[in-house]
Image (cartoon, rainbow, N blue to C red; front, side, top):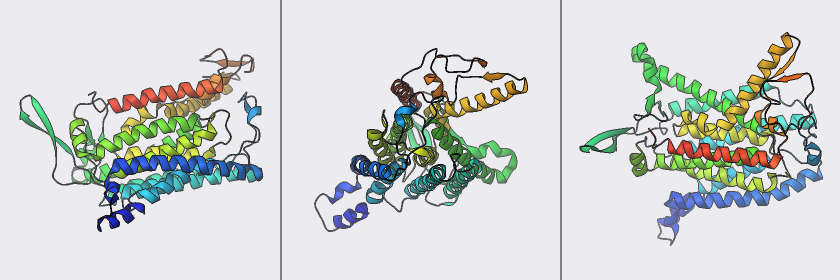
Length: 421
């Protein structure tokens, strides 16, 4: 709203109004504003929740050895993140931008699903919302996002084309017209553009439609996978918020270079008109997460709950899809990926053992972050663990910081892939 107000004032020569046309100015202002809102609103929200006794159920000491210390900690802190992300975007963002609208929709939609899950856990049953309902909600969002990017005339790209100037020097130019395309970026490949439609050349004139249908299913899968992976990562104080803030910074950098025709040309990546508003949203997202860490860092004063983790995962997934970098997610979100894989391996390996009357485990505990806080002798003696590491129990704060370090390395590698081909 303020963006449109100052643009209007600029037409009358009001001093300083032109600043609002600069992405860097609005993005940094959004970052600061979201951080302030997160810290300020977080304090009042925690007090309000404590007064009403809205707390997360005490965690079992068999899973969390520090669970006793977390008794009486409020949950649903994801509301802090959602409000601190959306409000600055409404104030400082271009609300006619299709990408901004999709990001706000993603945040509110998955936040609502997570809120319902948290509410049911506290008021009805500790199992929360049925997994099938959550998956359906995530899948429906993925379909809406995919179909919108397919059908909206505003969701377009300008493809990068190499043109030789003076041998062997090459410069990157762009096709004159912005077009709708299923192109995505393949990491570590020199000519790194892949059209999904090219996978269906055997369909002849129907290959473009097939490519878009595949894109929609790809979008749905990515939204579900990242959202659930992020949800599994939310198990320690500051873990999910810290990892997601780092990922958010990396995505903001990728969005910025994709929206800047000179930088996109230098890096030889596609130019995405309008994706500069993604920088605004993602820095609001990062600011909200950093502000939330003020209260969520060990020892946590509030937990984000599914209200936060489902929304955060969806934001990361949709942001990567919008800037056509979804194939970088396995690298950038490797921590989330490993959380999901560890649960799948643990569950299926345990089932194999049960059929033979034995208690088999791949890890001491899953998701993977839980295996680092299993104290010696805590596992039953009849458990047969395939990977019995580490031997001791790490402090929760150490586990969290080490996961952050891994995510920082992965985020750096993700950005470096733009040049390593």
